[in-house]
Image (cartoon, rainbow, N blue to C red; front, side, top):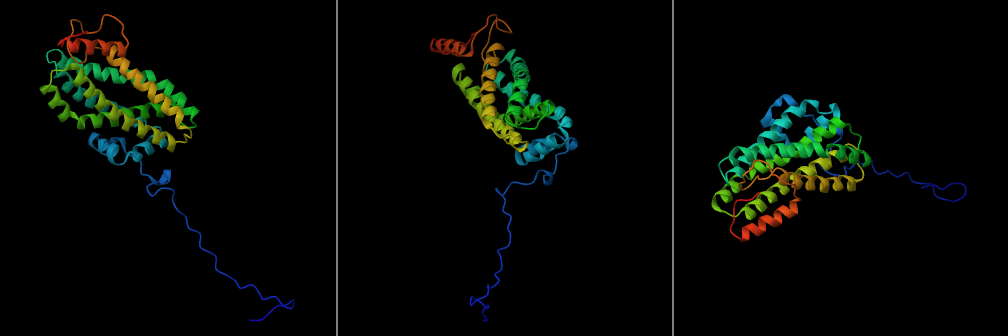
Length: 259
């Protein structure tokens, strides 16, 4: 080794560490790398995509606003909730065989439509770069996944519907199944909004509370969905907590028919 004129040893060149790119999450892929879902693939393919690769459906909504998904997702929501409504109606039988499915489908669709403007506003406030049509498709996406999960609960719901006479208990069971399905749908919706630029989830989570309260009030506004009544629709306004309190009171007296 030679030294410089000033007596200091020369700098030995060292090899720098290669630049390594590490993904923040092993399952995260660039937006353009995710293959979009083709709306013409059919209903079974759509259900499979919702359960296995929902990011493909979100990519379709993100790239072309998902207009082609509106009809199949709406059909999925109506069909799946209608099937679950038949099981709900089997608890009382009679007119409820068709009234319960109709009320459940209409109630879910109306609740989604009522809460759509607030979802769009909160999505924009959170930073997501979305349009109103995209938000509408995302709403259907949420309801579609929750509806598919409810179909999976059909056998369990049918067993309890045929083996118990407690309106309050069977109502709590259906409410539990709904909340499970809606929670998974809400999680998918939140992930979709984050992929579209949302940075403040507190707005979306506030909307989830509003949506849940709207659904609960809608089930009371369209009563009876469980049990029987002299009228197809209620004849008076009632808050859902008040209605539940009356159901519990009548249940304690052994009454199964209520308004």
